[in-house]
Image (cartoon, rainbow, N blue to C red; front, side, top):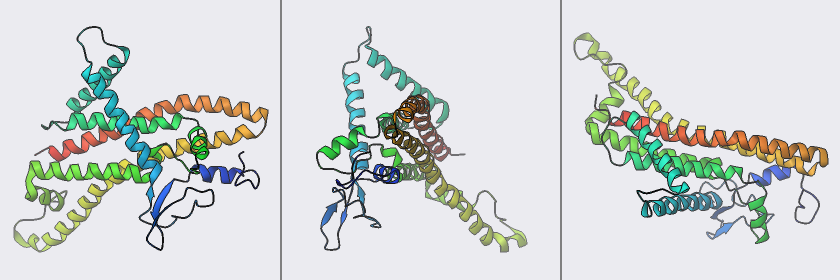
Length: 296
């Protein structure tokens, strides 16, 4: 494995830890912004709650811009004649997402279809970075003095939580939009157990309302948490397996050859996981927004 600061080879543990370390920026004790660019600066932002994972931000924004550029270029060049192969691919994706929205979302909104398309393609592109050999981009970054570089944004729990929190805000927005503030409050307090409205049971109504509020609040918060952790967990596990396989390449010809075969096999299988996780994130978002838009 590569040398660490010129003082000998990396151990397997050092190699794995290095690949799991983000390029971060944070404020130091004197109030200045610092980054863990150097080889010995990996923990400079450790424990700082305001640290920013610069690599995750960069790659997620970069891949989002690629999605916008590619789909916009296809939309501008769309023709009713014989389409190009890429145009045909884009049309298949759009029709697939549109069909999923029509089958699942029962409300009326012009936002859901483009939102679903954005989620599916954006998450897919972020997941797709997991197929890039783990050392290629970090070595290129190291050549220009950047020692840490994680290139799969969906293996960063901050990214997945950020997307799921945005979905949570949309759930609340669509609930209030379609049911009103009072309807939203009723959902949190009068379900799943309807409090008594007359008789001696009225005494227990405040307790039932508090119990309903506790249950429904937990259910509401659990939606973005499960949405983010499902994506993060699957992609992080996939990345870790690629890193473990990469450690075999420096262990001799026999293990290196075996590692190459494992890498190809896992990459082929991982294509299914990459696509499936993007699809699940999109579908659950549609389902949650459909439930929020249902006025019954």
